[in-house]
Length: 235
Image (tube, rainbow, N blue to C red):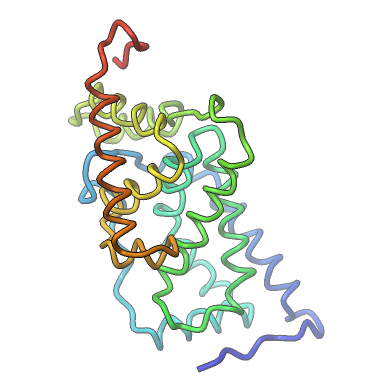
């Protein structure tokens, strides 16, 4: 089913929809700062969005395009934690909040192109990862912040039983990987996507996803095993 795109006539056109989306994202920005950022396992990531059928997802996208603020809020609430988490771990803590807001503007602006061929979540993952990788390509490597500032400290407060030194070590090792390696580790080991889903998100072959994950994990192990004398203390 092809969505009918509004043509911009009167107050209910795409410009009004986008303005509502921008306000929605702005309203939710403060809450994004305190989202959990635990790294070790996919089970500790944000809870999965509720299961929906392709028809329901197309209907939700159509409601957003029609200017339905409740539909926009549903999309935002359903995916905000995952979008923020991906931005945090791929692009770094300094830029994660602003980048996540930019991603949601892209999501609402691009819903007219969503046809339901892939799941809505996969489509959103693709937009998020592409935005994060593009952001990284425009910034010198040495400026990457591992995300152990405000977002990680708030996560520590909300999860006092976790192994904080290990979590910090993992976050910093992840930050030293190339953006491509970070992306595949985040998608597979944190978000729990299959290699088939990752290949769809990254636009690569399944074998490439598996190979990249193997190399990324090996690099992570090497970073974590590096002598402390050669590195900044992690705890």
